[in-house]
Amino acid sequence: MVYVWCQRLYIASQRQIRHLDTGTRTRIISHFAETYNGTAVIRAFGADRDFVRESHRRLDAHNRCQYPLLVSERWLAVRLEFLGYSIVLLSAVFAVVFRHTVGAGMAALAITYAVNITLIMGRFVMGVIDTETDIMAFERCLAFTQIPIEAEWYNERTKPTDNWPTMGCISFTDYCTKYRFGLDLVLKDIAIDIKGRQRVAIVGRTGAGKSSLALALFRLIEPTAGTVTIDGVDCSTI
Image (cartoon, rainbow, N blue to C red; front, side, top):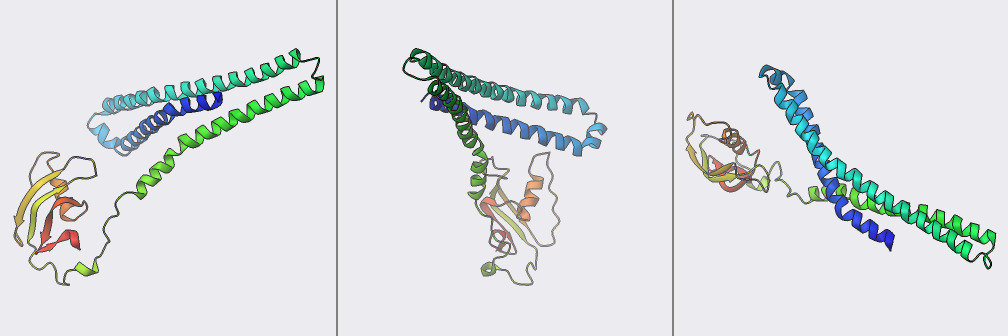
């Protein structure tokens, strides 16, 4: 019962700590990859120190998660070892107390079994803990299987004619979209009518949604509301 109590108490925090540890480690790796790929640009703009500070900040965040992870593992190891030594000690005490009724061979066998049971129970508890904490990888795989399936490349039922588009008229009607579920809208209530062969320029500051509008036109991101039609054909249906 004491082993199970230690196991449950340890798992209650271990899964969350490991989740934080994995997340902070991923941010370090992604920042390193981005820095490596953009080394020339970083040097050209003299942003070396900014990226070094950002790297230090992410390392500090990871260490703040790594330290309680190591401390919790040591906490469990100390208690498992203490329980094991306590079982062996009790076996030895009983062997001494009942030395007149228990033979030396039986006492030695009991102490040997106590040592073996201690090792087995410790490994069993650690195995159960590792299984429950590492199951997060399977949870991520399960989350991927629950992601909504994207539309097929071709839809024969709504396939436009071979000469489509003929005029090139583009119309955005109350169009809204976001890059991922749970994020804010990057385009909201867009209403544009562009006639065929008409030249249109999209002007705006960084983050205004110029690239998002192009991605929406080519349906690289799906709409959350509204439609985009080209020559009267809804792009989300083809």
